[in-house]
Length: 118
Length: 386
Image 1 (cartoon, one colour):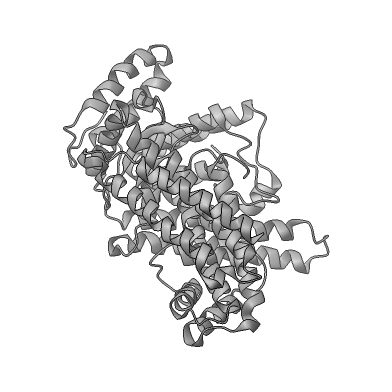
Image 2 (cartoon, chains in turn orange, red):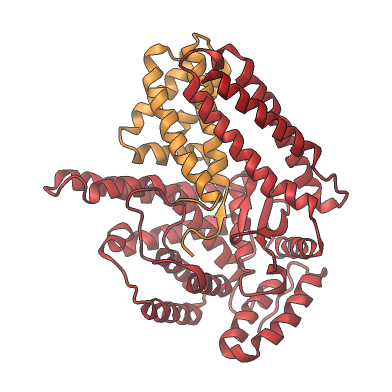
């Protein structure tokens, strides 16, 4: 069966995560607080370490980031900072990295849905 | 580049408006959920496009990469909406109604804890599911055949992963998390060991990193497979082999560079057989395993060292057992030898007949599929046996 037959669930989760990360990244770059979006992203990152999942998104993201190199704890710490006080310009490189990792996986999932690529 | 991106966003807005205007407002009750979610999705994209065009945070210098990423995701959504939900509503026909009715029958029979999705015969590939749209798509002529219908059970299980806030699903998701953690921990530990070794850095270390990224998706697929075995029985494992025979690639092949969303076929079949044995289908598991070995040998394919590294038997057994417990925790109806609902029984009977009398199967299937798809009387809880 291989890659025959598919679920769009991974694409849908990654798309939503990607949108959220880009919203926060652009807001930080513009010097906006974006409290609601930052809070949502912070909760998502922090939930990667949670015990009982209430949705697939944090699980999928956790697996993606753990395999992408670097310590998952650092991403969870970013989530905590986002939840508690928002992030500043010094966190931009890390947010950009997050956006890239998620975007790469989203594009792979989208290509698969369209019958192209892995 | 800003002006170009702005023009592209205007183009997308025109496409969105055109699609929205073209949604067929069909009256059939079974299409209500699909219609609502499709309209809602298309409507939600409007403000998103407008924001990218007007909000200062997206207009500033340096935001172009983020705008481009979001723009591409909007294109992805429009592609999907156009190809599946909008198309399904526009060209709804008898074959779609038949398959949707069968899915409703399955849901009643197995006590599936979520609403029935629409099943439309418009896939250009194979079965697929779009959880957000609550839509399953199948090949055009699928309502005329039986051997692959068991795949519907697998697709239904995907919906469980994307139902937010339903506490009935907690045992299933908890099992998913545990199984994912097992796979992830194994890959990360192996990657660490490879880092400590004197082998070149490009050897297995990078592959374990890649497999770690794939594992959560692989576990989702395995969980859906085991859900299908738990609720439909051996017919699903046979359908898996049959699909591989007709369309599959090397079942032991693992990704080396890019992510793959499905685990390789060999580990899928291996975990299905673990589940069949747990459910009491020992003889079926034996027959399925032997048949699998014969067809893969005929294609000159066999286990590779990489396959054995990625999927050691203990890991596969542990994952299968954990996931099966999670499926059981859903409270869905399990099949047992001689005791299955009428739809599962018919699908297993189809496989039995196909394997026993392949020459006479087609004529029988034509009648049986017609009866199955036309039958609206399926009731959960009615036991029957072959």
